[in-house]
Length: 215
Ligand code: DX5
Ligand code: ZN
Image 1 (cartoon, rainbow, N blue to C red):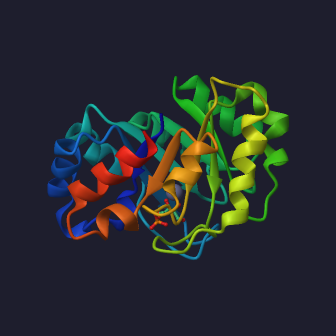
Image 2: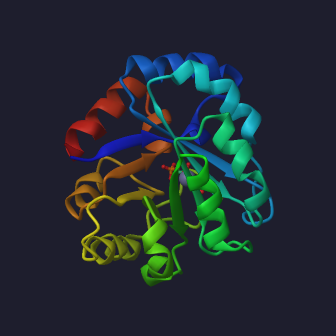
């Protein structure tokens, strides 16, 4: 059974407290938070202060924080202290990956690695002993609302074949009602969905529909 993780990037930033309330009322279990540094990706979002501010508004939710940063290492403690439950860095970043994963785990937070569309799934293999989570990007990171690059889905099968049942596999980018069943049937545990949830006329109904399809 897979879970849909709404991506806050597509929420209405002028009323985030209301959005958190709506997500909570819709029984959202995992909330995806995209941090962009305007260097690793050509976009800039928010930092750990926002994660900290939202934390009391979603006490029951798993905060799945996705760091699209060239140098995440020196910010890891801050994001963990702000309330991340899962913290993900990119395998393509410039910092030492093992040092990043160690820093995350030292905080008692689940450690994740993300792979961009052109990066092979095998890039995570040297770190398997430390990984709780792999986030497979199915769009070029930086923006919500893009179309899924379907070829990337083969990485789910490759990662599943490793037999690490305790390592969660997430898919991020272009998930919608037409493709979510394919994604979940390949074995993904978490499907991030921004536009498909927040862009729908009825966010609660869209979340329920997607969740039902991947159940
Ligand atoms: C893209 C982000 C995604 C994004 C997904 O760089 O990592 O989490 O919010 O949005 P949709 O579901 O609209 O593709
Ligand atoms: Zn993301």
